[in-house]
Length: 425
Ligand SMILES: Cc1ncc(COP(=O)(O)O)c(C=O)c1O
Image (cartoon, rainbow, N blue to C red):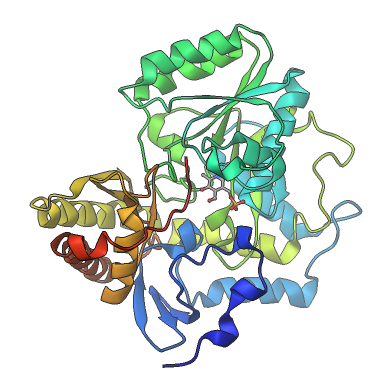
């Protein structure tokens, strides 16, 4: 076994970026496999928290980047730009199906969320926002303030602009609509932000009834609707954008993670032109935004998702996985349910302890890489690449089931260990 001391990143990287929950150091990746520095292989059922929709070894994405670099890697868009940027944003806008849409490009999901908040304030002339409890929207100053977890805001004096309400599951949606209207009546709300499916909070589906009512309600009080599609977008739920599942279009939405296929760092805030253009004078300009080589990759990612019928694969593999987990975990006392849509799946476990983190580690032993999330960190996060083949996905699922059973049969032994916590509420 190699000595991993030289990779002791605790020493060099600040704690806030250094969760290192698994303590595994990855040296390379092949298609749907991660390989650590000891040569151990793991089926990747996490795809870097949904950042690699097309998996590893994508020569076309590397080529798109390097071809553009050979021409010109980037020109600061404050002064000028390159044809690839226009070609890319036109293609991106087409996926949104929003009429007369425009785009603001950035690097991370968090900056696209900030962009949406700024646009909303400038457009409506109002100050405040409504967001949801247990929602995660990012780590920049404003997006951090919008998160529905309190632990993540500890020791910080964040802007006091957000009111949090319960995510509108079928259980909560009527009350949530009433709570929202009560806040809107104060007349100072610029926008409501929501994930089309609640992700890091443990995967909760919204009530379709909520989506039938919310936009009209917001517009009645001069506020707008922002969707966070950072996790749900790029085909993950089986449609290109999550909102297509619910037959609703937002005023603005944000994308990142898979937007650059994991090969380029790219984010976008997309929406109605008049809202996007409420910001002027470099109010959302960054030196490296609309980075040409990244846009070249972004264009190739969108085209590949359509050309390779990736969303059809998402639906097929999703059904296989769901059936497999339900059938093979039904007798487990700690199994609650499979949640989610497409390849944004969560295995919810019965526990008020963070057992997801423990089972995540046992999954590594079994040779499969998963994440975990949820209020008590007890939902296993299954977000593989969207083009994963059925055989590999099912082998990954078998290993996950083995890890769950291993935990269940040895709970006494494991419960003495400290459970790692990701988000704290
Ligand atoms: C739903 C959602 N919104 C926003 C973000 C923030 O994106 P980023 O980490 O790229 O800034 C994330 C990241 O996990 C996310 O899952």
